[in-house]
Length: 313
Image 1: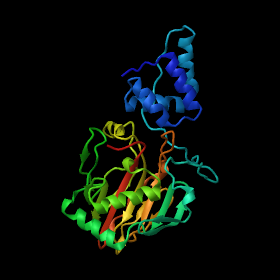
Image 2 (image 1 turned 90 degrees about the vertical axis):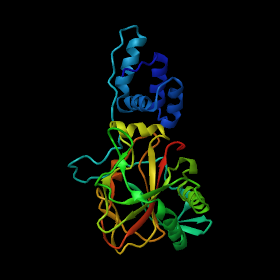
Image 3 (image 1 turned 45 degrees about the horizontal axis):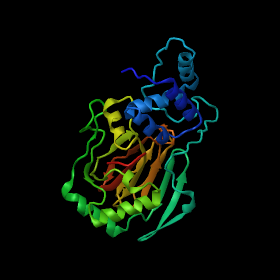
Image 4 (image 1 turned 90 degrees about the horizontal axis):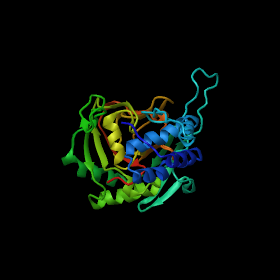
């Protein structure tokens, strides 16, 4: 569907984006002009990817010439990676919009004690925490989720909604924010250690993986060029980060892996891995490609929270 911008709005948009304006500054302004979430993203990305071409379009109209259609990008704008075939591949820096606050240091004081930072990785942006939940809290969350469990699904990329897919063979229970005193306490703690406000968190996904169950490599962010995923952007914007809390100690397998860099995080009860993959201009990091490795012995329980750019309803 064709979109029309006045010269004044187009000039403002170009000036703002070229000047580094974050997406969350632009989105509400264009929304008030009547543009929906997907349209705003395509306009924003058009300036981000081809600022000179975008400017040439509205400058032509301003000069009294006939307008020329400007093709808008369909997909996401992704953060650059190392050039293919480079002698010494080095990843360009990536600055996620939801990093762990630097002032936190190596330990974050919480209601139950200290949550400790075991390691940090800059690209992809990954932080491993110890003591996010106590063992008793892990057991209580598993018990609370147990009766609600059902086969896990994935987003239907074409039609929207969710579908069962062999790439994801776990069982899950979706628990709303504040659903119980335990979950409310966990909500507060997640916000404390990540710096992401509670209203921006999706429901907590408590998942069980039996022997052989896995989640094959994927990205957690939504793809703009896949209609079923794009519609989800209207519910709080893009996902910016994920926190995976390990609720038990797996006998063998079940690691959270990042194939592009050869990183595998082994489950340890009460610990959590956090990764952030969206920057202030809503560019996503393809290096956040990750998976849940097959469980080889025992079972694996995790609780996952995905976090958004804006409040999630």
